[in-house]
Length: 426
Image 1: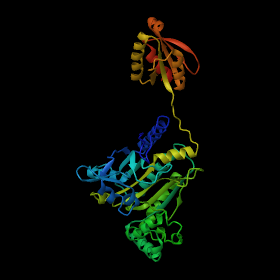
Image 2 (image 1 turned 180 degrees about the vertical axis):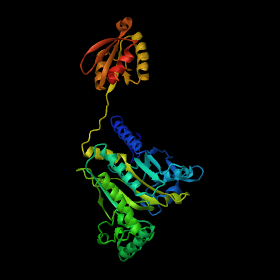
Image 3 (image 1 turned 60 degrees about the vertical axis):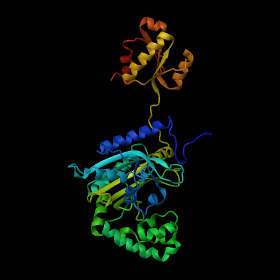
Image 4 (image 1 turned 45 degrees about the horizontal axis):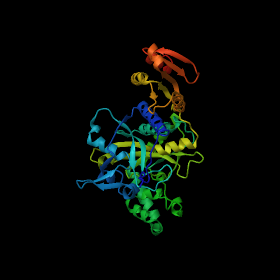
């Protein structure tokens, strides 16, 4: 019987993995320019971290987590998102006590959610995200939004929409919370079972319900923007003014909420408006949070971040027809004819690789013509031919596969010659 990959997972094979590598390298370089440093956290954590850090009322905690007991009887969970783990590390390692603040992290790694698999949404998926902890300056919000937009724009995407909202501070949220309960309570029995629970636990999340989105009460729900106090209004205005200064376009959506229970002030999503992208248009989302660091045992610390799915990023690139500038060809292909030439070719291949040249060779005992065909299929820029005559003359035949030009180069000089040819003599 054959064994397949579990439902909701995928193999990323050569031919596709190069796109992942390119995208991840571009994102890493972007974070370097913004002075965000990489953090790597465990793939599984104590379940309590996500219950407290993501929120008991969220769909992630209630329905989607991969949770199990380890051999010691401890409940552990495969991480469903990155923020809680980053905050736990920030607290555990007392990073909040270091002099250089805010602390700015980025991460790239697999996450796990038990969802219905569909295009661009897997049960194991790769997430890129950033977190800036230790400052409540609205300029940090604008910086995070700029980095998020640049993540897509620098890869060539154009059909993008940045959607903003303010969830206000704790006082504003509490006032809005009461207004939401008063508004939806008469319709409680008409709402789905999840929303009936949310109405008591976190009524803001009723606005994010997929089942009840068409209910007439949704369109008439009180907007958080109507309940912002002066501090929250001023905070939001500053964020928008910084975006205006940078020339970053955005639209305001008062119904935009985020799944994390501890979000406040700035909340945002980036959406694809590309034709054919799919019904689910959201590419990434994030926002500011206060209380999360305290919830996992640290001091009161404000933070902001966002996360994106690499799978959905690649889908957006495909939808817009963006061709990534991948160099999938091979620098050199080594052709060896004869037993002694084979030994010399093994040594020379090793020396070229040590010098940074990408080289491959035949390992199936093919004839010379078949080896040249293999080199052509692999997109080799040069073919190096070494036979008994060349070995006797202490030379190797180098063929430029683009121009067809051939040269004999001494074996002592071929490594330097190939480096010069491939780098343009730099």
